Amino acid sequence: MEKDFILILDFGSQYSHLIARRIRDLGVYTLLYHYNDISISYLISKKPKGIILSGGPFSVYKKNSPLISKDIFHINIPIFGVCYGMQLISFLFGGEIKKSKYKEYGKSYLIIDHPNNSLFNGIPNKSIVWMSHFDEVKNVPKEFEIIGHTSSCHIAAFSHTNKNIYAVQFHPEVKNTEYGISMLKNFVFHICKCDSNWKLNNFVQKKINDIKKRVNKKKVVLGFSGGVDSFVTAYIIHKAIGDSLYCIFVDTGLLLKNEKEKVSFLCKKMHFNIKIIDAKNRFLSKLVGIVDPEMKRKVIGEEFIYVFQEESKKIKNVEFLAQGTIYSDVIESSVFSKNLINSSIKSHHNVGGLPKSLMKLKLIEPLKELFKDEVRKIGEKLGLPKEILYRHPFPGPGLSIRIIGEINEKKIFLLKEAEDILLQELKKHNIYKCVNQAFIILLPVRSVGIKGDKRTYEYAAILRVINTEDFMTATFSHLSYDFLEKVSIRITNEVDGINRIAYDITSKPPSTIEWE
Ligand code: XMP
Image (cartoon, rainbow, N blue to C red; front, side, top):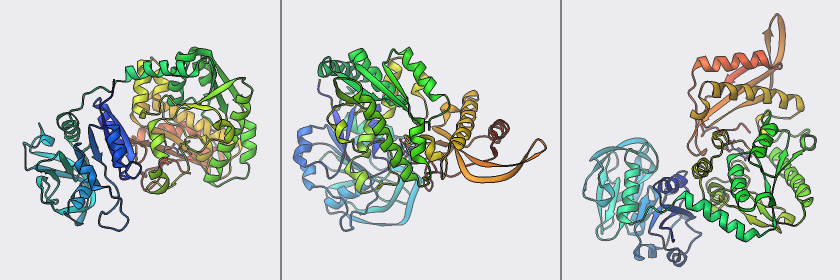
């Protein structure tokens, strides 16, 4: 069955992924394309039922700002512009765009001027919307009419008088826009007439059948990290080909406390064919003297590939390499992220190129089309333990980027112990699942303290606990002082070598989630 789908042209907004996810949550498949990656003829050949032009950090009237061909308005596919997308539509139809008097970020009240407009079906005349813009449409182009305004934005929504073209200045995809989901629903179901036929159940069975057919008694290796993506990937491939799947788990020595044992236990339970490689000493010796965070990432990435290659060579007749790539990895490695907006703030997310010898293997990436929450839903349906599915993400370079400056065995030990206490307490108090990532940073700073009757001179550590929807932005979690005190007491009492704890109360931006 062909899936109805909505194509999103990405102009670089931090919220573009969210639009795609929200619509998938409605049961309609979405694909995100960098605005410049797709020609109008290719776009038509993909047969989307609707097109969304995303937001973006540009000004349409500036030189070299991203534009699209006007032909897009003549192919008879409904279009919905969001923020920059709205300004773009207006600009291409000859409307006037100007810098707003005031930059507008945050809450506003939308007043609907045309309650009968299909985009506003079932939505009250006044509701909260979330704005984030510095330009605005000053005059609507001829064929358009204003359908909504706010107190400071005279044209907050408009639509074409006889074509299916709609646009809003605010962000319907963010949760703070009270009826944002209803607007997306109206666009997708009423205007684009999509069927809700994106079903994860069918997806899994289809993947299993495809893999069975494609692999056909050959062997597959998988770099197994113990995270949710690699567990679900392994599960699907294992269902298809059983023990012809070889999972390779590399213990870098930079993992959480008892991680190797936990992974080994769970893999045995699932009957995965797993090879656990103890490469602690190799990694540690390569990291001696390195303080630069990007250098740490590079060294660890390279060493990982060496170890993985050595191990996979030991398995005969391997023809396929499986990876737990998910859709956000694919988008993040796209031209946009590389060249424009998210230009290498940190070189992470495991999307670097593969070495030549591994490139000879054919790739299997069963989760490539899915967002993280969809992977979790599949995992739940397959009956994977919650403990795996709802684990916080853990970075590839592991604890190395949580030890500021030079790494050594002692510091790794201290950090493992301290982080384990934090995670235990979060779970014990039922906070773990309410926050999205929690860890500790070990500073290269020692301070004077007193334990028992003895003066100490030990390391200071930072607690970092954050809430986020997409890890692109985040706020620190507002944990109670009582809880923070409990964790601080436990760590300073139980970990010999840490005598001072502070809580990081910065958000992202301006900080990042990790410290390195
Ligand atoms: P930042 O620190 O960039 O982190 O705000 C955003 C998310 O990415 C994770 N992260 C990494 N993941 N390799 C990874 O696989 C890395 O080098 C890396 N650096 C950061 C971080 O833990 C957070 O979830």
